[in-house]
Every structure is written in C-alpha cells, then in structure tokens.
Length: 364
Image 1 (cartoon, one colour):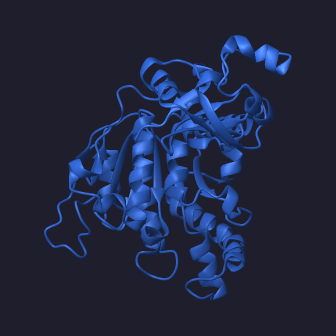
Image 2 (image 1 turned 180 degrees about the horizontal axis):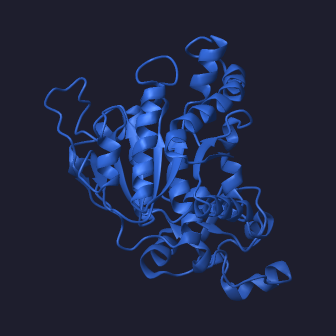
C-alpha cells in the first residue's frame, strides 16, 4: 500500500481528542502522517468532520442543538475547521483546499464528474483537498447522513486505492468491546462476508461502527481497499499508510463495479420503484440481461425517461438503473411483451425498460 491515492476520513470524536472542541495537537499529528505519505509518493484527500463541533464551541451552544442551530454552527465552524487544517499542514508547507459537497452534487452525473475533475486538479497541483458535507445548506433529503458514506463516495470518485476510516475504536469487533471484555478484533473482512461469519450481528448494527462498515464495504465493492482503525492512538494512521496491519482490513472485490455502475449504485437518487417478478430478477442478476416490460409487476413514484429507479423483488431493492420509460408510459406497458409496446403507446422508445448497460446490481 505504498503507492496510489488515499482518502482519510476523520470524525469529530478523533479531532476533539475527547474534548469539546478541535484539538490542535491531534490535527498536527494527523497532518504530519498525511504529509509523510505524500513524501512517499501518495496523494491524500481528507474527509473531515468538525465544522459543527468547532462552531458549537465558539457559539457556546448546547450539546445537542436543533437543526437550525446546527446549520448556524456549521457556518461559523467551517472556517475555523479549515484554519485549523491550514495551521496543521503549514510546518510542511502544504496547501489545503476546502471542498464542500451535498448528496445532490453527486446525484447528478454531470456535477459528479465536475467534482471529480476539481479534486483531481487539486491533487495534480500538490494540494490536499479537505472535503466535508455542506451542513450549512444540506437538508435531510440531500444529506449524506454521515461523512463515512461521503468518504466512500469520494474514494470511488477519484479512483482511490485505499480508504481509511478513523474512529475511537481500534477497529471492528465481534461485539462492543466497551461492554464485552472478551470481544475480539476482526482483522480482515473478505468480499461478500456476512455479519454472522465474523461474530454475529452486533458490530454491523451498532451506531457509528455500522456506518463505517457500510462505507468500507461500499469502497471494497468498487475495488478499493478499506481500513477501519483508531484515530485516537498516535502512529496508527502512519502505520496504515505505510502498509502495516492496523485495525480491520476490508479486502477489495476482485470484480469491482465499473465506475458508471458505482455512481448508479451509490450516488444516484432513485425517483421511483419498479417491482419485478422473480423471473426478471433472475434474468438480471444471474444472466446479465436487461429488464423488459414483461417482467414489471408494478411501480410507484413520478419519474421521467432517463431517471434512476430502484428495482425491487420480494420487498427488497436488489438493483438500480436508468429507466428508458417515464412512469406514466411504463404503467401502460407493464407486463406486456416487447412486441406489444408500440401498439399500446403508439411508439416504442426502446425494447428494454432498463438496459443492462445502465443497471447496477446491489451486493448484499
């Protein structure tokens, strides 16, 4: 792991050092580790929480402010966060850049590619991008939910080779180590490995660790190695970036999703749901076929041709794709054979409802 591009996600808990605000010593240590990695030939992007934390401290707000106060705190705190990162990297004479994103920025394919181009240009200029969700304007409908998910999207966006998710624990455990003394650290997670195979459902469904596992698996599905490790202990990030074992390592999938399919699976926002029969699901999942109207049972939502839709069977989403038909037209042709479409609509935009080239299967 000594070459390539790395995304490092650092949460508020790590940045605070256990206190109520940003810990300058922690930032200097992490910046030093990132600078050493750059000196060894790696490109580094940081996904940093902490704007709300810094703003809340400056405004002397309660521990759990309302949504409006959180957004105000983010507005005050984002500049303080960036100044802290500038000061942390200053001894190594490294320039940092602020990049604020919302999910809406990445749901649109053109904006997604523009964000990619901006980040890659910054890296070519020798700059360390510091990415954060734009909490000042993001409402629930366009929020990533947490910076773990954002970091996985950024890793795919820039073709990273490694995603490092720093937390207040040493990695993924078979149970909560704070409550279960005999909980074991999981050293490695293989592609497709289920929670039961690594010690039960506990670590996959427990708060902040669950979101890190989802992000790590998302990265691995895209062919990106991921590590969940401690952001509190000195030397851990440096060890990970140097390729030494720390925390929990998620093996990258040997057959990763193509870039366009990564965008469909993880960044696109479905505008509707299309329920298909078991035969259609088998054709899509096992035989690599396109979705035909004959396999569509029902649909919901208001979507136009070209919009992303969720494909559902048995009550569960199993794929996402771009529909060749608007909802109003698909409602009229669902269940029909391809040869019957033109008679039903008066025209036939495509043989397929979703072409296999515009389809991404979601891995369990």
